[in-house]
Image 1 (tube, rainbow, N blue to C red):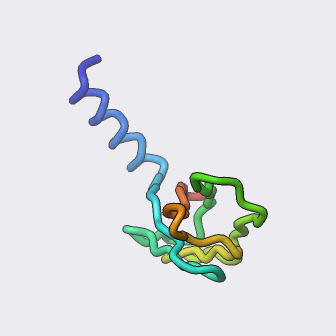
Image 2 (tube, one colour):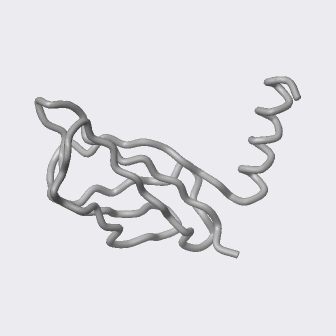
Image 3 (cartoon, rainbow, N blue to C red):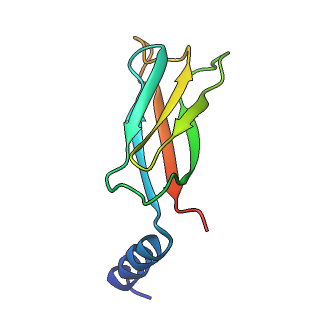
Length: 94
């Protein structure tokens, strides 16, 4: 399968299952709300994965999910050591 066909297949799969994903820097400790590019009809299932260039002693927790956004919280944040990023993925509930 060529690259264009693969991208079309992935885009079709994302549309079929309502998959959205992204990455967001967390600039300060405390809550962070991330808006979905396209709202869902009801709250989706959300998975997060933090990324930082050193060990962190705090857990990121999803506090709430709405059709429009989700909010996470932790004491983690970007610093002079580098950005603290949250990779996320959301999909419609079946």
